[in-house]
Amino acid sequence: MDAYNLYHVIKQLWANHVNKHSGEIIKASESIKVCVWTNEGYREVRNAVYNEKIKMIELELDQE
Image 1 (cartoon, helix red, strand yellow):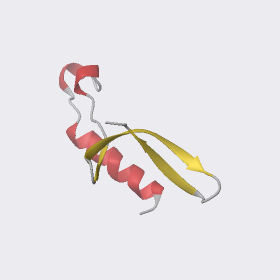
Image 2 (cartoon, rainbow, N blue to C red):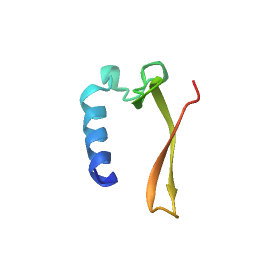
Image 3 (tube, rainbow, N blue to C red):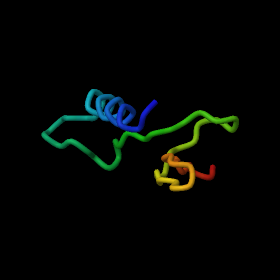
Image 4 (cartoon, rainbow, N blue to C red):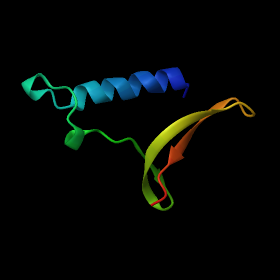
């Protein structure tokens, strides 16, 4: 999947599920995390960086 397409899918999922009560879009305690499934279970995405050598965006995961 291209990064641009993934961006739109994630944005739409966020918009559909974010708490919109009281006119506040984001409440710190109710943020929506992005996770991926690995052999160790779910890992939270902490950052994304562009790897110039392989021309790809890499997701940096938590260490837990």
